[in-house]
Length: 407
Ligand code: GLY
Ligand code: MN
Ligand code: MN
Image 1: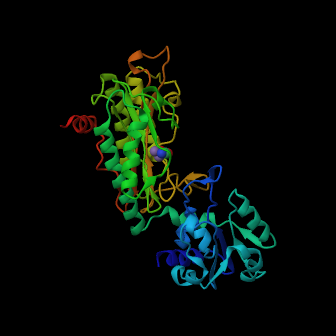
Image 2: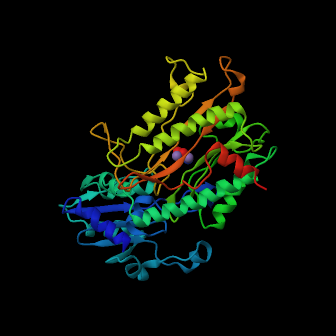
Image 3: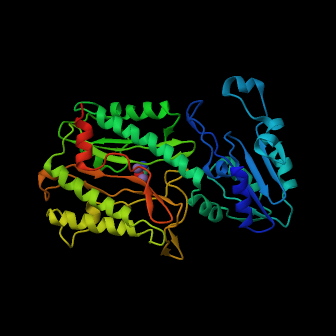
């Protein structure tokens, strides 16, 4: 029903003679004949609820049709059960199901010549083929209306995102309790791997488990170095549960106690993050959290003598303060309308993730060398302000030290 309502809502926003043609993701090979676990394309799943590869949906006011793989008892022994053509109409509420192998024969029957076809080509061979089949029609992009819909989460989506956040928060707590000096970063990552799998979830993105100076590499994913006594470890890890992502970063001391210098930097990032979160409410500019976080970090670094007023903040803080979160970790939806920052609306979910990254540098007091800190939470815009979906996870210096030193 949920997918049916979404299709109806989407169709009500586009041309009367619109026909939506949308394919799912292709299967991806990892190496040789080994594939990555299949994950449907978010747009396709959002509208259909169908999880198998090799499928194309055709959606209009008059028809809802899908091309999909038919049953194949021999292949199903190897790759698992398929829904198949006979059961697809009832299960997916389709008017008709066609074999994906006969796409070329039947697709044009479903689209009258005066139709406007809404289709976005993904960069894959299958979509290039599909694009050729559609070349004689007027084509429009579906992304604008569809992604605006995905940007505003309904109750079901919010509750699923809360479940994903809950699983990830527990994993971060377990990691804080598990860490000790001379452990490898991958051993700490295994806490997340195990907890996610145990909860029928998967990593929503490749996790970052970065000890000491590795935390200053923004996309560090090797996770294969030793965690040293006296260093911090930055963990950016979040699970996907039922197709919805969470995205959390915590930074904590490997030995359970922050040094004075680490505390100073941590507190600046925390102050920036809390103030940025505070600015999130309907009607506020989506740029506000970044503006506020940047100002606080700039002032904090100046007060420690690490930055002169004329120095660029990007020396130590070189990324944005957040992004939309949803079915994709960097979720869809525009940040601007007519080149102006748009305003927050209830139902949007955004991350808030300021950081400070101080690489070794002759001009900097060595007590601050190789400190990389980011704090990231997931924030739902509500009608009156916001709710932090990841609120329950330890974040202040006291909370983290207490948690890490409990018996
Ligand atoms: N984990 C990806 C990000 O924070 O953007
Ligand atoms: Mn993020
Ligand atoms: Mn993250």
